[in-house]
Structures are given as structure tokens and as C-alpha cells.
Image (cartoon, rainbow, N blue to C red; front, side):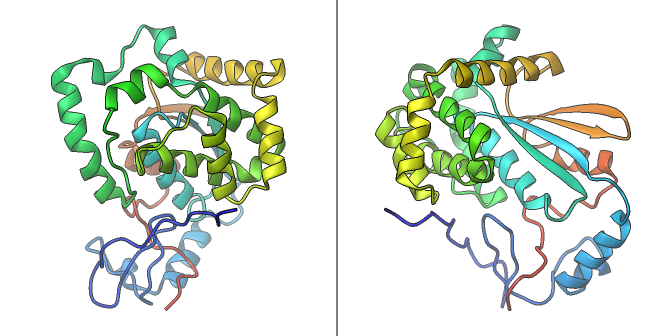
Length: 280
């Protein structure tokens, strides 16, 4: 069984400084930033500062509705996974069927418009560099998006979320790695099994979840989550729902995270923030 995949370190961010793609961890004891003097402090001090501001407050709930068929969902997913350890939030990952959301609101894939499809093929790799996520566009872009879909993958993730939620983040990431980084299949059972194993799930457990993909419980749960996203007003994915001070805020896309920080009253430090506990 392969070991869980860890995203390789990206380009050097400066002398004596590098970041992990997943955590955004800095290998330098100082966090260099143009934002101000606070970011020049050691990461541990920065974390203590953030903790002081949220001490005694109940974590705000963030629901992330996502589908591994969506590259923008991957970007939003990684940002929120990084910030869940820095902000006073409780992140809930909600596997959702993007085809169901699009059908419910009468929306079409952006790739259906030739000019927009051409634009996306150029934008996605640039966004991957900016977010430090290894995204590349599949060779058969239209076949992957419009024909193959993600029903089996999302049913599998739904089963994981129901019985082994602590593995949901890692397995989701490995499915994205297959389709959006290595241009590999995510529709066949063996492909999904390979992703689960690479994420660190035991083969026997992964096979158990494969067997549950066609059960009424899993089908109904995925349908329920998709309907919940639609009731919130989703017209695409990713769709983040923030519950703050008794109010519900809906944000679409992976480029609204700075606005999310504003709503939460938290500090935005870019898509790859410094992480407490970074090694020297």
C-alpha cells in the first residue's frame, strides 16, 4: 500500500524560507510580509496574538460544500484547511454533487462556453501557483467535466463522512490529486480505492465504503447535502456557509476568503498563511 501523499514543497519563497503546500508552514523563524510588523514576529508569537483575540469565544461554524470535480473547490478547500488551525472556527466538510446543484438552479458549466473554457485552461494553472496547490488541467477537459462526472467519488466521500470523518480531508485531497494533478480517473472503483489507500485508509475499510456507495443511506445523505446547499442558495461550488453571531452568510467560490475573514473578524494572511509550529 502506498504511503499517504504529501504535497511537495513549492518554489523557494526567499532566502531561508519555504512553504508546505498543504499547511503553508514556514521553514524560517520569521514570517516575512508586507502587511505590517506583526508578520515579522515569530510564527509562535503570531499564533499567540491570534489566540488572544479569540480566547473565550465559541468557534464559528463554517460549512464547505464541495465536489472533487471542481478545481476551484480544491483551492477553497486547501485555504480553509490551512486557516482552520489559525482562526476560531469549526470547519465542516460537506461532500456535494455539483451536477445536482447545477441542475437545480438551471446553471451550466463555465466550460460550456468556448471562450470561457479557453480562459479557464489558462487561469487554473496560475491559480494553482498562487494558492500553492499542484493543479493542472486534464488533457480531456470536457470529457472529464461533462461526461465522466463525479457521482461515485462523491458517494464514496459521503460514506467516509458518515463513518470515518477524520479521513475525509485526506481522501478528498487524494481524489483531487488524481483528477486535477495527475490526470487520472476517479470514476472506477479501483481508482477510488487507490486514492483512499494513498490517503492512509486501510484497504479493508476502503473496500467496505466502496460496497456502501450504492446503499440507500449513502445515496440519501449525498442527496440531502446537495439539497441543503441548494436551499442556502448555491448555484455552483465551492460554496461556503459561515454561521457568525446568529447570522448566516453565504460565499461562492475560492476567491471570497478575504471577505470571509472580514465577516469572522479574523486576520487574512493570503492563501498560504504562516503556520504555528513551523520547523526551522
